[in-house]
Length: 75
Image (cartoon, rainbow, N blue to C red; front, side, top):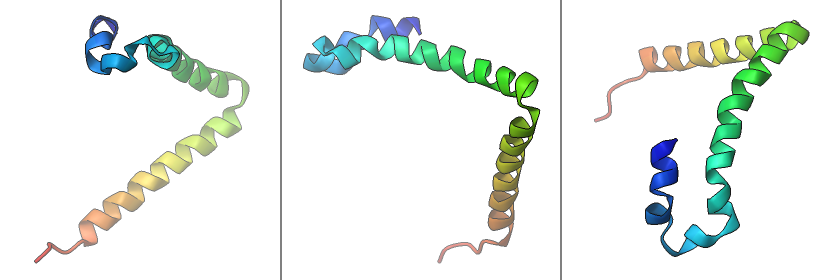
């Protein structure tokens, strides 16, 4: 996060003065805190929704693994 704030002017160039680029460190911090916070909330208060999210993620990863196993090499 420190590198993000330190190099923001360099990375953004002339757009560094815009409100969006000034808000990027706050957005990143909100996501870093909000993601686990939402996960804990779902686990404690809405376990059925937490189970649904977990099942969707696991089913998606299983489908990707099956696709990779059955894939043929190109050429």
